[in-house]
Amino acid sequence: KQWYQRRVRGDQMSGVAEQLAGNLKREGKHSKAAYLLDRFCDDPDTAVEVLCEGCLFSEALQLSHVRGRVDLLPAVTTALLAQSETTFMVLQEKKDLIERLSTRIVLVRERRAAVEAGEEVMDHSDLYSDATSVTTASNVSRRSSRSAKGRRKAEKKRYSLREGSKFEYFAIQEEVKSTLAFLRDQDTQIRDMLSMLLIQGDRDRAGNLLTAQRDLVALLESTRKVFWPPVQREEDEEGADQVEEPVSLPPPESLRPNAIVMNQFL
Image (cartoon, rainbow, N blue to C red; front, side, top):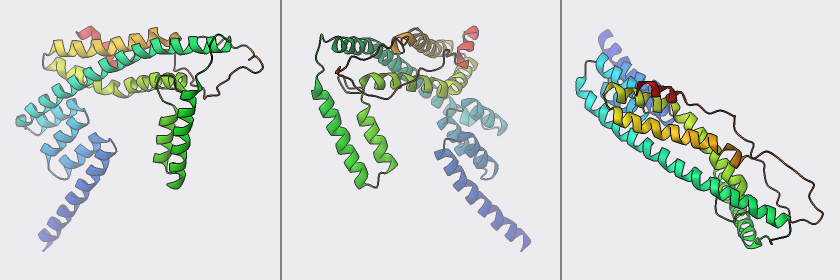
């Protein structure tokens, strides 16, 4: 009877741990989720899979060795190669985007200067289009009890990267800052991928990934003053065509992801 009670408690513990692991995975806490699956569910297969989903390849490799499950290593390698290729492509796409935006923001700034100097008339068709979109989105948001999702959708419409939109200048700066945030968020994962690729002797793939990250960092640092030039404000002339918009503060001066130090090993 005591053995049966312990078995029931063990099964219940396993069920609770599995449910909790699912919640942790959805919250992005893959390491903790994998620990529960391995420790309380005795399921190293799913634990390794979860670690790979979270790009925690070093932990997946360690767990495979601790468990004596060399049969799990091919799955870790496959996930590593796929994720490194995806990350490389994303870094390349973001670099191309920043290059386009650095050119576009100069044109937007020149157009604004021409409007302020009276050399050009602001095309209000785009402003009306944006205002209509925002008004429509706001009405929808109110009808849905101003849900957070509705407000985010309205903000996205308002601060559009579409050329000629009312808040294009602000939207460009915010997009650059989101790229900076992406680099910081992905830094640990990229470093882990670089370490694992080097362990496997895949120096070419590791070098390509590091170069893509380094090039994006260099581009962001070199174009900082293009996106956030030194402020030179003059009093607006009375009656000038003014566009009120939010202010996008510049990011910190330096950006040196930890993965950059891996360059010494390549």
